[in-house]
Length: 245
Image (tube, rainbow, N blue to C red; front, side, top):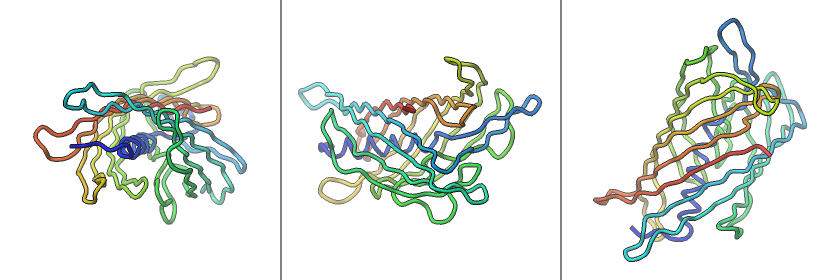
């Protein structure tokens, strides 16, 4: 299967979007041995993230694979809060492909409730950007799952995420909560000459959530995407990090 230049950007951003959808924003409160997670925002709050995706395509017939780097900034501004529902305006991109601008920035507006669920119509292009929080208190070692369908640039992707709450600690004077995450997903990637190729992703990673202002401080994942139905299929590897700036 031939991989065009635009496909690594498209796939890398979609994989990054899938992992971003597993990240949460949560205020942490302890009640006995259990912890309660809840979104905490205020009007005018601005969050800035940088998504880095290092993409390793399959090797060519007579040449080694050349890694591809895609870096995408994400800026969100809370424009209002009504009855625990936050309205957030996001600017996503433009991405940099190996240091060179690729495409344009995208803007979207979404509304989320106190548990991170989208309220009303989903934001076009990247639904549930910050995922869903657990609906019950967790003690250390507890797990929960979340299934959702997102899309990026018109590409739908169904994502299953499994979280395990590892515990809390202090890092550089900041109180944080750590999670491990395993994710899987499936969708179809448009071909360069029409048609579509089915693909699936599997991966694992970690997430660190700040307890003071409730923002994800860092997330990382290693993900493998399998594209097409050929034998053997095309396998692509993406390592993704999400850092708050």
